Image (tube, rainbow, N blue to C red; front, side, top):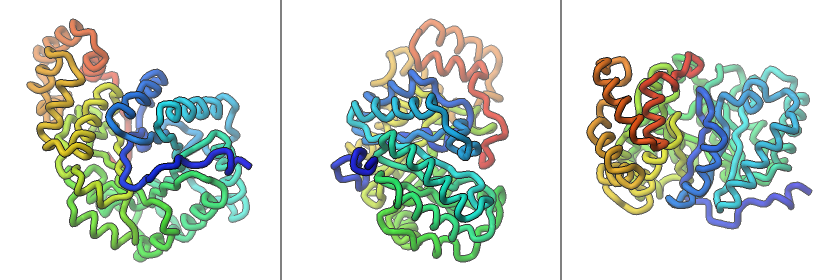
Amino acid sequence: SSRRRHTRCSRDWSSDVCSSDLGFFGPPWPEAKRLAFAPFLREIGFHFYLYAPKADPFLRKRWREPWSSEFRNRLGLYSRHFRSHGIGFGVGLSPFELHLLGAKEGKDLLREKLAQLEEIGLDLLGLFFDDMPVHDGLAEKQLEAIEVVRSVSSARVIFCPAFYTPDPILEKVFGKRPERYWEEISHAPSEVDFAWTGPKVISEEITREHLEETERLLRRKPFLWDNLFANDGPRNCKFLKFRVPYSRTKDELSRTRGWAWNPMNQAYLSRICLKACSLSLLKGVPPQAALEKAIRENCSIDLANFLLENRTRFLEHGLDKFEPETRRGWLADLEKWKAPEAEEIFGWLSGEYAVGSECLTD
């Protein structure tokens, strides 16, 4: 059976780290940039990668439609490529409006899609119900979907609940959280991981106390899905999130089932951020020093100095506050440096990474 052919990696997955374009609104990365991430992740000590950009309609709003051989072959290519570099590969499926289907129809369709993913070969499978309107029987329907997944897939299951943070923005945008939602959903089998973004959708700090409180709430250590660097909404896309990874250390990592990052829309610039997290989480380098070291190791001397000089302006001021003369000077310098990181900053300053209103929690 496909379950026997595609077994999960024979390793201890606890407190693993990874990168992903799971919650990614806006244009997905070009394929060449995504594939180039495999050796990079291996180099910095990360262990797996999940593919689930929200712009891929067949994993979210059009998930019910037949999947073409081209789509399945592309996922198969990603799986083989990342695994060949020793990186576990996963796909996130967001069965949008699953609750509107009849019970049997919904389960049968979900099984069909899961069986196709099983044939591709996954180490991880994301079942994501994030950023969808609240409906009746929310926890019950999601628990049923988890059971379907466990009956079909041999992969490690990472479940994203409808409320993946106590941040009130979720209730404001998607509807009031059912009173006993977390209590009910926490009865999912203990081996199922729960994705969690921290105290906020974008959490500047994730403390030991918050992680311990979340463990009690979910009846398991959370699987951190960290949006610290996310810049994919209509407001956030105007910033480059070169943040210092405070409260992302070995101590916090030990209180999770894993730690994953949503990167920036800029793939090569995201490498700097992920390298800083690797240094802080895995090697104990102080957060500020980790970011500075990552910038210098990933960039030429001129570009590194440029980023260190302007990092705070890119993070706090954003595109709308740059003077035209300043912008022109930056563009001239960036054009000379001919590095992929410089090209991405050039594109960002030129408005190439604008994202529309599809990101509802921005």
